[in-house]
Amino acid sequence: MGVRGLWGMVRQGEERVKLSELHGCVLALDTLTWYCAGGIKPLFYRLRNLVKAGVIPLAVLERNTQPWKKVVVKQRKLYRITYKDGGSEAQKKARLKKTTPRRKYSDIQEVCRALGIPFIFTEGEAEKMCACLNAAGVVDGVISEDSDALLYGASVVYRQFSTVPEGRITRVLMARVQEMCGLRRASLAAYAVLVGCDMLPGGAEGVGVATANKIIKSDPVRNERELKRLLKQHFARHEMYQVKKVIKEFYERPVMRSCYCVSLCKPNPVALKAVTTKIWGNDSTETPTLNKEMEEPERKD
Image (cartoon, rainbow, N blue to C red; front, side, top):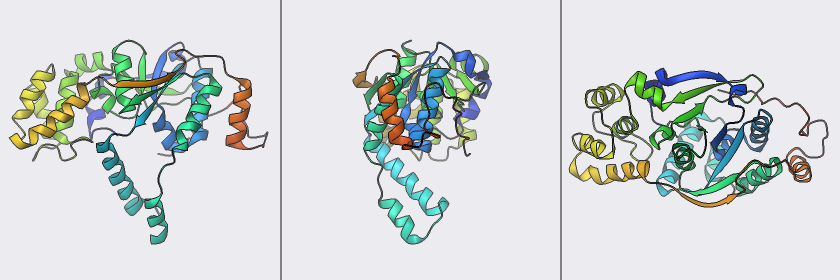
């Protein structure tokens, strides 16, 4: 979901790279993010194009949604439907009542199995598991538009990701952020708590983006202990209970519940035919194949 203004703070640690430069890299992906952005078809295109480009994606799925995240998702859905989406009042009420079907997980699993892509289930935030795997050296980076990946400890994050041939991607390197911006993970976590994040939307009273920037640059913190010490200066005693819960969420290791395979396998032609027919129907002119060139649909910003 991300923290307001965080990508701007680390801009000096960014660089633009081509998709072809990622050949052979293993990248963890919060798969549900791509699914929710456009549905199963764009997800299929993107995953298949990654495999074709020689990138090994590791799809990460959330087994259970955290209670605090359910509240945030509900609030954002309400705002989007009320103020941004069109339609009559009756249509808006119908969309508010509609829930995302659990079938999404089975659709994603079918696509991954057909393409031979490994996937795992995690308890809690998928971004957190992706970042943990990256920090441990299991994967080479994290594909995410969510700046929370940096707070969870990711060292390399790929954003503004395009899977079209010769597509360009923004790579954020935490080592470069530390060198160019003088910001460590703990400083970014302090900024997130001060301005407000998903678990603590209000942040610190009277602290905005500019003030938070000044605080973390005038008093840089290097670890969890120093982070707590800094935040105690800006939150009341009764607020520190929730602040400590946020810090624990950032630093506590995630739990993996189950996994499917541990490496990229050969695509299964039979499963591929079944899943593409299910998605596209029996129209052979639209149904993609492993050998048919496919382009990622244009993103609508």
